[in-house]
Length: 206
Image 1 (spheres, one colour):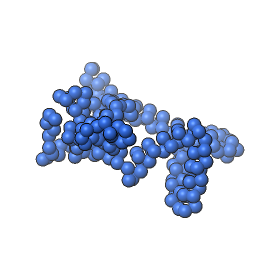
Image 2 (cartoon, rainbow, N blue to C red):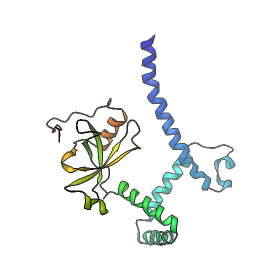
Image 3 (cartoon, rainbow, N blue to C red):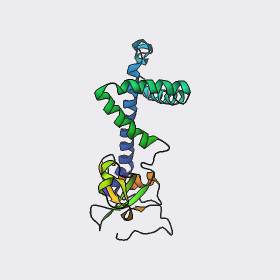
Image 4 (cartoon, rainbow, N blue to C red):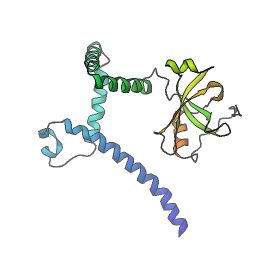
């Protein structure tokens, strides 16, 4: 009896969590239909809502935005828009901060979250997986002696929260592991281990 119950949980729990996450994402993206005039919305035209229609609309809007801004006219409009936002005190600081982070994370030329590393945390005899986010800058760099890198140490099982650390480069071990594989390893709390890479260096004590 107990065996069958656990087997059922192993099958249904991943399906339930996946369905919950997809429902959350789709329902959130469906909110883009609120920008459509009421007379053109599905509820007005056919009498009921169509789940996922707003998600498709969001994807189309994102694609068209990227397509339009990749030409001279689009770039000009974006520059005018950013100049306008820079004249608004509070909006300026918020927009510029968010844009810097998004450019770093999503730009193909950015280095953030492009490499999984092994770092000693929370003490030198304990190791965890982190992601390179860059190098220390500003006045912080003037107070660090030696070669340092910036890393993000995610928490388990929720990698969206974590800790930002600046560590000596000599104590950071680069892993022959994709970011996706590292995230799966972290979210699963070490249960879903990445494939073993023969000949890879093993980390010793710093």
